[in-house]
Image 1 (cartoon, rainbow, N blue to C red):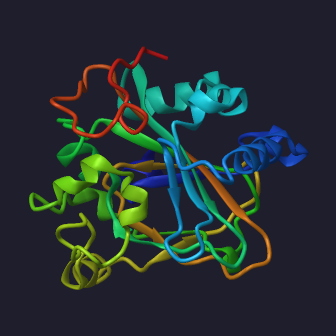
Image 2 (image 1 turned 45 degrees about the vertical axis):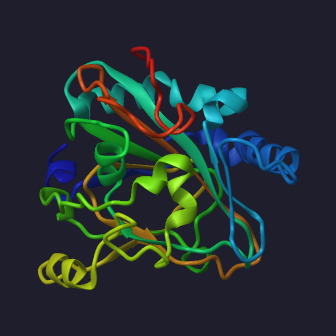
Length: 257
């Protein structure tokens, strides 16, 4: 906990040993195959290639992902960080497909949860489960240690996010402020005392991180897909107020885990 409180994140190598044996990777592959031509709710695509970029509400679509987010060990870790009972706010698979998967610009997740979903408090934790090996060339997460100590206000975030997945909006079309992303000045300020850290890892590793931890990732330059399953846990007392995004992005009636 000391490292988490200081840096805003902690990496747990080999947390899910089953991932190394293949079934979780197979679940991601099966979802991709099933959704290859699906443009329904919860599916975000790359703008250039049309490849699946993110799958929201994955715990609703496949038992493997439902089992992961309700894992007693993971839930207990979330409880320890949050300081009490937790519920699931959102889960999604980020799929950076080989050679076509684009990156994500610098942001703090709680920005979206607060301004778009009405999450009043920062009592939450993100769990990034490595579904595949995340290699340096495949676009692993980049973080700024200590950035979780600062909430960078984004009141001008575009409400158009409410009608679509924020995943597809990590670009400059609406401007950084309107997109809820960090500005160059904010990045320079955050990195003045803390250097950017890259977090490659093996399938089965888990990254636990604060909702205010500034993070990003580059595109996938490798020949293999890079899979990351993100689950966001929040205190059961941290009830949403007038959420604007659909329930597959922001759970309306979450149950304690």
